[in-house]
Image (cartoon, rainbow, N blue to C red; front, side, top):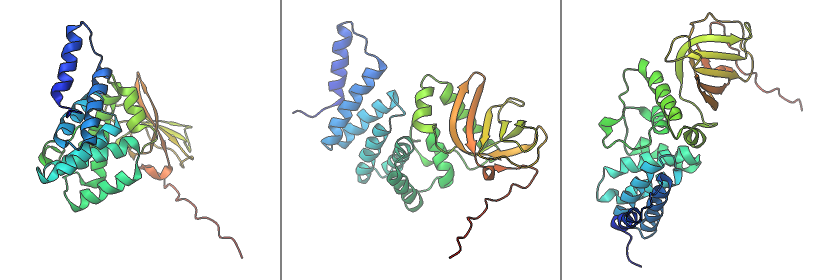
Amino acid sequence: MFPIRPCAILALLSTSFCAGQHLSISLLGDLNRRAGEIAYAKKDWIVAQELLTSALHLNPYDGRIAYMLGTALIVDKDRDPQKLRAGTFYYARAAVLLREPSLINWVKRQHVSMFRTALGLDRYWDFVRVTPFAPETVEQYPPTQPEPLDSQMAFLMLRDELLGPMGPKFFEDALSMNSSPQFKGRLVSQRPASNPVELTISVDQPGMPEIKLMLTKAIPGSAPVGTRLEVEGLVRSWQPDPFQLILQSDPKEIHGWPFPIPADSPPKQIRQ
């Protein structure tokens, strides 16, 4: 069997167009992925990188493609050391999309021991979750400062992805039941009015309930509308119009509440 090259894919596409057939984006992605898998299996890493990159551009939330591309880049790091950083990024993407613990642990070790970005490890994960493609240089990663914009930036990136044409797939593959970034916003509403179990906050547009927090248990007292809060939680669902991201949050994930939130009670000891 002759080696698969990008020209083989182009020849197939040209033949189809000449025959009057218009290939869908899905089919184009499948063709690039299949050819990339063949090059990957043959350990033709340069060709695999090209084909899998093309496939990923057509389906940026496919964790399997991200994993294979990461491997092809990392194996090729001796020829180009810069590929180690990109390969680690795609391993991190695959870890998020596939929810694979072993990949998560590998990325943690690699990020700490081999290279670092200005983001730090925690914010690196937040960046990877909403960024489909690896920056070409470390300088292209977002800077650590200014800190006040981080929360809004993360929210806007998530919102834009969800409202895009692949929003539902992005939600299922990358967000659903995963931990959210930490968002900074202002309280819009609370239910009930005292000891609430549900909060809404605005992050980008004042007064708009852009994030709803479904608390696992009531928090004490109440807070004035406009109170600054920092929140996070598990992403449960979302709605497009008006846009709202719905999180399930433990009270300890709510910061800035004007009343002390009791710590979890330690388990009772069983007498012998």
